[in-house]
Image (cartoon, rainbow, N blue to C red; front, side):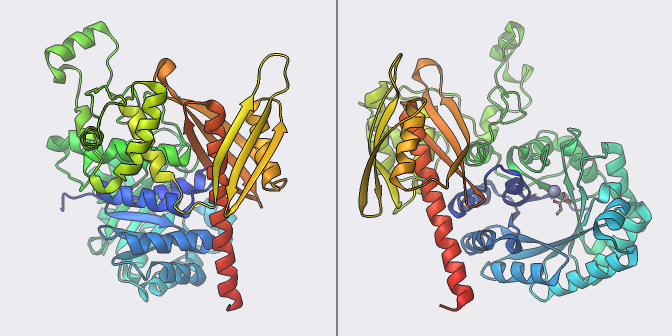
Amino acid sequence: MNDRVIIFDTTLRDGEQALPASLSEREKLQIALMLERLGVDVIEAGFPVSSPGDFKSVQLIAREIKNATVCGLSRALEKDIDACGEALSVADNFRIHTFIATSDIHVDTKLRKSQDEVVEMAVHAIKHARRYTSDVEFSCEDAGRTHIDYLCRMVEAAIHAGATTVNIPDTVGYTIPSEFGGIVDALFNRVPNIDKAIISVHCHNDLGLAVANSLAAVQAGARQVECTVNGVGERAGNCSLEEIVMTLKTREQLLKLQTGIKTNEISKASKLVSQLCNMPVQANKAIVGANAFSHSSGIHQDGVLKGQNTYEIMTPESVGINKNVLNLTSRSGRHVIKHRLGELGYKDDEFDLDAVYASFLRLADKKGQVFDYDLEALLFFNQQKHEDAFYSLTYLHATSGQNIIPSATVTIQAGNRSITQTSIGNGPVDAAYNAIIAAIDGDDLEIVDFKLDSKGEGADALAQVSLIVEYKHRRFNGIGLATDIVEAGVKAFIFVLNNMYLADQIDQQKQEKIAGV
Ligand code: KIV
Ligand code: ZN
């Protein structure tokens, strides 16, 4: 049997659908490009029929990605498959992924159909998808709780209809490793045409077993694993990409399996997904948590100093963590910054050196010393800047203190109009937000979440604000970074406004298309 495990990433579909606020088209593209650099084989970019925004972002990703197969999800319905086919047809390589539920509980309660009817729908959907591409994946939703006889029948019918990958999801994260491995083993023993397709698995983490279940399935013969960066996804999330990949790599001698993942890109991918999705990574998370490679006990520290492999089963460098620290100040030249970014794993075409260096100097003037995490944060925020942004901040003044009413004056540029407003509030951030809302007539905006984090350590840390705003029943994400909390908050709000502006433009274009303008 082939020893290569296909890594199918669904951060932008299963992961994205579980976020409190959806990602913008640009943010999705940024993640897709990162996944391409990481070396994933298949990128599930979205669910095109679900919204015009999703359709457009799947199309954009399909156009831009050259070194991975781009995939779209569809229910077993012609209109979903047609939307997928249309959005993906611009790609060099694309896959249509169609699914229907197979467990009794889903078939009887959700679909209210007979088992025969569900097989017929699946076969019809696969044949319809084959009109667009020969790369068709079929998923038996809730396979983990499906009767094995019916699962075997469905898998055989799906392969016969033309599915080239058949996915076995543990949709509700219910199974345990021996059981899930046993399901895959039974399929290999009982489905006569099993050798005509790749068997894939897609495990959710409700019992914390998604990675263990995926591993058991791979040991039983599955050759595709569906996973997400940092394990983001519905409820407790999906199988974590970094954990399954590093398990296969670290235990390669035992498992004799490989992936095409460039593991030294893992840390960067994790940071990007965490920032953009506004999903912090727990410090003790395997592979990418802040403490994953730090040793606290004296005995362990002593051991590691004597020999790294006494307490480390993989090196931090193997997942792209660089532990050297360099002091950067306003006297550090452009070439030093470029060199350091290179050491941190960023390629020249990933950043605009002029822009990063200008921000670096501004920060160095304020902070004195700039650390690696500051540099990475600056890079991230420079990448997030909307080119030709409609809204920008040109002036901010806020006051607060004991026994005074907090107030703020804000000037924002909205296209070619400059608007200044002053407001009061229950704190300086609230006052600044009230001023912005007054400046843009934004009474229909609702701030649903405001999170303040520190980036870096101690008094040197930068303030990072992550903000979620609801507008026209949709939620938009924004992030802002500054040495000052109020400024970080205002920058996050401006970020949200630009995301909303872009989304409005996409809706408008779609409506014009429908009206034939
Ligand atoms: O969890 C699940 O069953 C899914 C399918 C659509 C593959 O996400
Ligand atoms: Zn899922």
